[in-house]
Image (cartoon, rainbow, N blue to C red):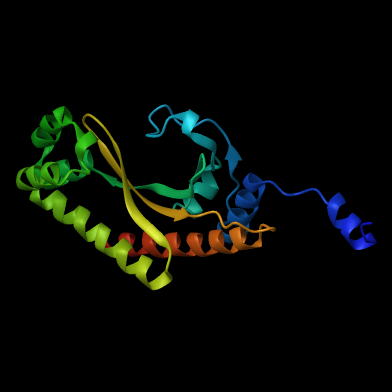
Length: 203
């Protein structure tokens, strides 16, 4: 027979993963997340996600731009993502002028992860590639210091590539949600530090 304590524990409703994410981010960053459908331009198909959420409260977004969205891949990790830290169109226009920026709208950025594409793009727009490398280096330094799996994430296809700071949170296999809460807290702190480090580059 079950003890009274065991029976009491069995009656306590288990908090969902989504609720843990929302509550932890609210406590750490002061932003309210809600589960919604991702933007049509989101790079992962909806069928590959368990859920997607973001903050849609203007004042909170402005106060904590370093964490604006979260999602869970099916049988995969949780990802946290900041607002955009920049994009190719703005950076090209700033460095090379409006004509070059307009010409870049024909660029297909879907291969940006390929070394050959990066080499070609770097020859065409070296100032922009140096900026991307600086951002990647800043994120890598924070990732090493905080031991959070951070990256400079890029998304886009033809004409525009947008960069954000992202953190991967592997869901711990545990009987309670405490390890997940702790991992999320650490990830939010790391994202805040990485986002601030990039902001300082802009003076």
